[in-house]
Length: 303
Length: 320
Image (cartoon, rainbow over all chains, first blue to last red; front, side, top):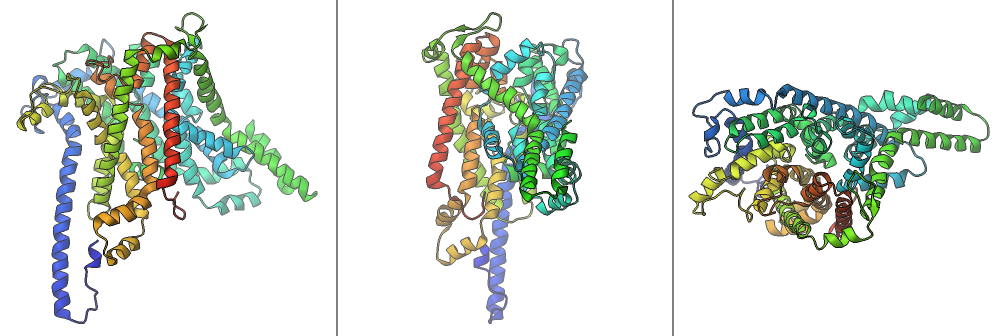
């Protein structure tokens, strides 16, 4: 915006142009200052709940709710110890194991099934592709409510309630259209000459997929994996419906049980457990933020 | 098994030297086999976990079914009951308020901040990441617990409110303030649409703004005549996805009300009520009817958005 008022470099009057440049720089400096003040202020507001949550887990339980400060007066690990001691005789690490297991299996399922589907949509031309692609996009917009009840009835009749199968089957069958769409978009941007060259050399689709596409798809795989893991990790409704035995609980469900059991005023251990339940998500965010933000920017994925 | 099949059918098609018509036909068949071969997992998932269940729940919506005895045909009874069920009507009020107020606020925040960040300045990447972070964790149980702790009696928000002269009292127990509290939670997650807006803003050619400046256009005029039309495809995309997304709020409402939808049914969101009917009192037919009404409503909203988009969304050149 300021570029318009900036003087041309080869202005005839050097004194004038120097002055103009100084004014321009000062104005730009002022704007930059305002920008950073606003942006920093906003950052404080946006990050406050998260930082407060982390700090609160070190505060004594009774002084969490009323204390907005971000520095604990008397820090202790009591809450963390209480949270790690588990719930109802089940170790905290059991919940972690369940969550990790589901998360990792989701990643494997999503990368496997969605990349296959994406290849068909992006690189094979066959009758019916257009219709199927529209149906796939349609499932993106479909409220999940309409499928959960029959799905539950089905899995219940198959005796699969209280197993991880209902939570994982869909991942291995590319039900999350978001990831298929993300990979289709990515694949469409890969140069077609690569597969055409391979084709002339006699390679079939299977060869092209595994030796050419898979290595090139790494960025899309990383983005999909992170989202698949985090979504599985944060999922609440699925485990709430399908996992009834506490030893199968994932962290969010365990956390909910914990909130139910502890008295309202005992926020310390709740906070500690809430933070511990978010640790992998926060770590993923810190390490892979570029992939996450780029993934959202290009594909419009939700967090 | 798929492997050998495909290799065998693709191989000869390439090498064959018979008439070009058969080659073309064979290649077409090979492509067909490959296409459906690669699509097998997705097709299975689509039929078993999406299409099949959709049809099943359409049938269930016309039955009484409690999971333990066979479904019995009930005709339109579920639907007529729905519209006389005060809890159901309440769930619509809560959800509609959340969607109609929360989504525009969230998108407005996302757009304003995206425009702020679009000016190329140092630290842009840092701010972008920081603002995006809540979108990753916002729907989690952990954040719902924190939100509850912040908005409860004597909590941070209560203290700040009192400092500014508001009547004391937390928001969690106050039926008129639980919806604003959850709307704030969704607005807090403005980062995801913001990142999408930012990507869209980057696509707008700078020359347009420069030309407008030369013509004497002010910032408001530039916003209305350049930014909005150029950004309209992205705006449409965000509006569509965020609206559909907003209908699905569940974990936060569940945690804040302990699964009850309280206080005074003020957090009885559609999904929460459907969960209560379907998975607490096992009225599967009733819940299926609820689900299908939602599908129809969301379908109508989607159709309206797409139809209206013809008048306000401008696709220029190759943008999407």
